[in-house]
Length: 408
Image 1 (cartoon, rainbow, N blue to C red):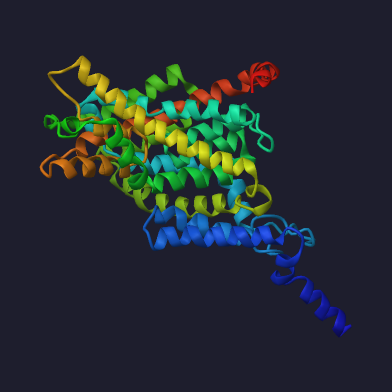
Image 2 (cartoon, rainbow, N blue to C red):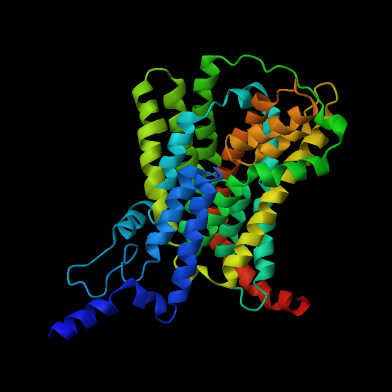
């Protein structure tokens, strides 16, 4: 009896799990989790998210712990606590919406209101989303890679550099790819200071990088109050599928700007935002299980995510150059176009930093915040468009696959 008990104990150890078939994959993913922790702690890359995602990845890949799943030997359900968080907040889409509420409470739309044409820069940066979508469909013709339209749309949203939006869309369209897409989205958001500057320099001349922009006009309190109400009204009329994200964003912003709900605004910015970030990060990390993560699809997602992010950055810069051709009296520094991706406020800081490398007196931060917050709106609208049309476009894409395969 004692021997059997010790044998059973040995069979339930993590060491046996790592030595079992497929256990090497769990070990690799645990190492990936440690890499994410290193990037967050030692390098300061999106620490609030990468710490929780990395730790969730480690927990999900511990053999026989069933922290992110269901214990098959349990007679009382045995559901892991991270699976409960995932089912409650990711599968339902609740966590990304709450994150957007907090982002809205932390966002100042003043620069966008003062210079409305920067909205075009935020919209232009979403081009990367649709280019990555097309790229994912083309990659699906390669052996070992299989992306349908739902998966391609989820991958494309990485180009918006908006983690919560990527999670929201993926949880609706391709939940099996959530781990890969979330890691790609947040990794590229964290790498904004490394990825964007070379693209910005490549697409601009020194003279363009030296352009000084006019000081933004003061924005009244009434304008700031009317802005979220107006945006929500337009969204509700034209694109209802985007209103969950846009509505949460605008509600948070209205609570901040109206001046009579300071307690609510403070809660959204701090307690709510921090709590949901913890739960969201652990839940996303739990989807990085070896069985679902270690495949060619994941590699394709990482490559396409980088392409989408690069094209989003470059398109914003190029549209700013076009705007200067059309309006030479009020030139725009093309560097702020790169802030059209919605990595708030990091992308705006990168635009300002690159500008000051060429002229220390060139302060572009507030100007870059215009396209930066426009990018948040743009990614939410793009998400709404994809959620609205993808279910109806799938039969058409499936019908075109045989014809396209002839040319591949």
